[in-house]
Every structure is written in structure tokens, then in C-alpha cells.
Length: 130
Image 1 (cartoon, rainbow, N blue to C red):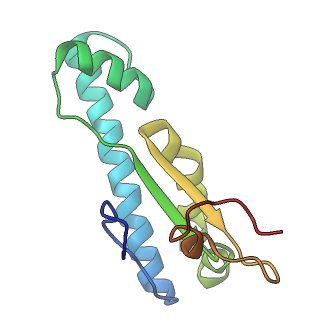
Image 2 (cartoon, rainbow, N blue to C red):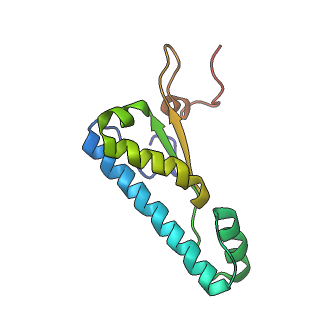
């Protein structure tokens, strides 16, 4: 978390149960956001299918609390699929659903001498080294 003030959680654990628990938490967050979309649609009488529509409708009428965008960074993501079937299934679901509700996922896997995305966050640029 050094140098990044808005980081809320850093999970540095290779245990399958820990990863599954954290991804289940993110899934619950997605479901809560979808519920807020439904609440806003009911209150406003307008269709709310994604985060952009949510912001447009809610900024006009301020009917429900603001939902911040979120960035989820998963380093060594292939291990999620190797650890347990449940973790892989949740990850697949998140990849399909998160962007709609304003949660963006960056997945990285280490290749030969390539530095990880977590290391790059402490740099000035995300450009790969030549």
C-alpha cells in the first residue's frame, strides 16, 4: 500500500480458501451494486443497466448513494484457476459482470523477466521495459 492512498485491500496469500473468500466478497459487492441499479430504476422510472447510466440518472436526481468505481488487480491470476474449481468459477463470473457495475479488473501473469503489475504500480509508468 506504500505510496497508493486509495488502496483498500492488498491480499498477498496463495491459499485457495483466502482467494475464494476475497473473490466471494467482490461478488457480493457486484450483487449489491446491481441491487442499487434496480433501486434507482424503480425510484427514477428510468432503465439503469450499467455504471454510466447509473451516474447519468443519479446525478440528475440524487436518489441513491454514489457508487465509486473500483479497480481489482490480480497478479499471477492463473493460480486462481489452479487452486480450486469454485475460485475459477467465481473469477469467470466476475470477469463477465464487473465492468457493468464499475469494477475494472487487471489480470497479470508473470512471463520470463516481465515485472508484475504490482511492481509497476510503484513506477512512474506502466510501459514495458525494452
